[in-house]
Image (tube, rainbow, N blue to C red; front, side):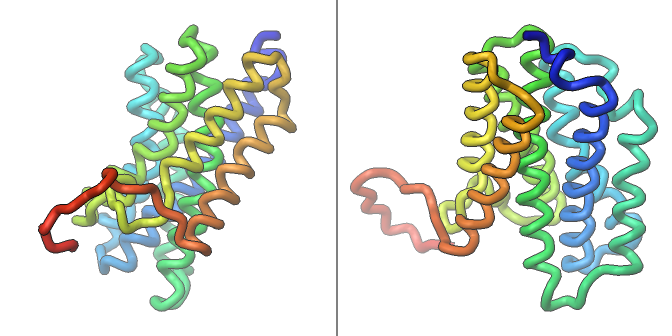
Length: 219
């Protein structure tokens, strides 16, 4: 079954826009927490929303990338930044909001990134890898610009990449067994989202190096 039979262009576009919007919200909220001005809020929203997809498109040869050919992709983060600029929650609630919106974007982008990579002829493993990159790339750029060590690289942060890996793996397994549908792809996105929320709730973390005896002080 061809992906075009499962996802019409309008459905794929809608999923992309939703993912862009929720990632942009998370970037803009972090900018508010960092006390950035309106330009900084807009930049962080754009980078968070489009960074992962831009990397994916360049790798698969979808050039010019969708971020530069679809006005909706560029304007959506600006709308999210505008919403956050005027309606951001109280300071003490911003961190929780950032993490929830980021988890939602993680789930949506690991699915849309994987399916788009596969539609451009990549094998299942490469598609899942680019699905992961699509999901976490914008967040990594966001943290770097906000002068924070990316959550993806911090041992003392709750699982971040693993939920995206699970979601992308579910998509490629559905592709392999020819059972990818809007329902199963939505289930993969929700699974990644819920896993990320559970990781934050119960502080699930990935193991460090086996038998580690470093005397370096933890930061």
